Amino acid sequence: MNISILGTGIVAQVFAKALLAKGHQVQLGTRDAKASLARTEKGMSGETLSSFLQANPLVKLGSFQESAAFGEIIVNATNGAGSIAALELAQEKNLNDKILIDIANPLDFSKGMPPTLFIVNDNSLGEEIQKRFPKLKVVKTLNTMSCEVMVDPARVRGDHTAFVSGNDASAKAQVTNYLVIWFGWKPTNIIDVGNISTARGTEQLLPLWIRLFGAFQHANFNFHIAK
Amino acid sequence: MNISILGTGIVAQVFAKALLAKGHQVQLGTRDAKASLARTEKGMSGETLSSFLQANPLVKLGSFQESAAFGEIIVNATNGAGSIAALELAQEKNLNDKILIDIANPLDFSKGMPPTLFIVNDNSLGEEIQKRFPKLKVVKTLNTMSCEVMVDPARVRGDHTAFVSGNDASAKAQVTNYLVIWFGWKPTNIIDVGNISTARGTEQLLPLWIRLFGAFQHANFNFHIAK
Image 1 (spheres, helix red, strand yellow):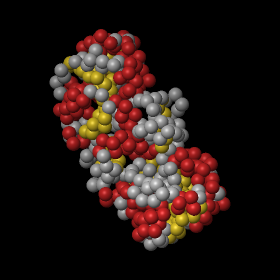
Image 2 (tube, each protein chain N blue to C red):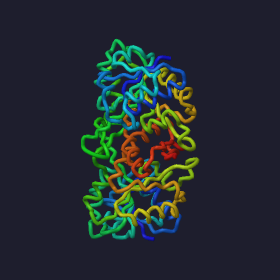
Image 3 (cartoon, chains in turn blue, green):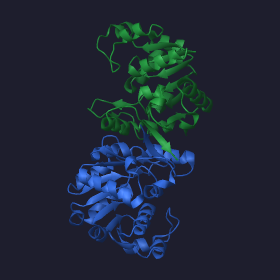
Image 4 (cartoon, each protein chain N blue to C red):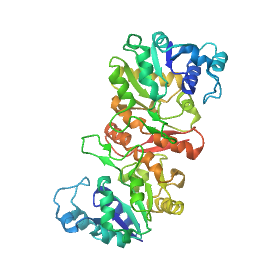
């Protein structure tokens, strides 16, 4: 399957490697591929984008619109502050009525640590994306855990939860299925919370996630809904 | 132990019964005891305050200040919108440097369902209470689940989490101990998230809790941190 991953940071890289390992074709999307490749500062993954691509030569890199045109399905792994701009650069004709797996969060680092949310309470990033691109089938999921846990739930002991929010029931069912076959999520650990407005609920888990990360000093944990 | 419970709603009633069953003396606090007793509409508990008190004659009722003066420890079970006003009526001389177990949430029902939060993101109700009453040892906990689960964690299968936030380490340790001996919480399921500003994290779980309650149609569930 051809999969577009918008973004080139650690989340995009971890996703790309996991999808490649499952035999998919992956193209990362960025604003300016040349500029991204020229960057010499190492990201949170500990390497530059160019060293990542050298180590993973099957991962393609293109502009946002090239990546979006390439993908049968699109993953939003940009940072939340840049998500709408990235999707606008991807262009509606390339997004069309595809499924967008939105794993981004509206984190605002501008006021120091820990970050706050720049959309919160009576709105969410998931909803903003859906409003701006009404044809796109936005499915918000996996945004409540570290990227390593997203693609390898076995890193966390016992049962833990992936939440799914979106307006299109069949898109949600398809994404749920992808979580199972791509990453080994247990179907009983995937909860359909409701329409895209329920992304308000999952995006607001981030403030606690960040504080727990601070308390634990590692990211191998996740929320679980016990019942 | 003499315990003050500020509030007379279902949360206060459930807490009062659970503490009585453990042999404690409990006094509910309200703005106007006569007016509260005269109310004929049934609350979420399915009964009026006066029928609750008839059925549980050991539960005392008093003004906010009487209840606060009575309690060696105080539980804030008012609705969040009324918490600061209730504590002001309780008066600082009665609150003093006691422990306040703050189980309230800043839910705003004025814009319809599901509620939003009237303090959120860069502040929390727990912090506002602590700022207004600097001597009080505010420990935010149990606000992330139904009141029945607060006092009877066995209603939810498997491990699940009670978060604790507060500035005073010994007050947090004491409250953690109360959760264990009063309600049977497993010590390993109680997480100290940090100072009172971490209440931002736990109060922001409510938007998801409310949506899950809608999806499940019951409240016998809770967040758990798997790791």
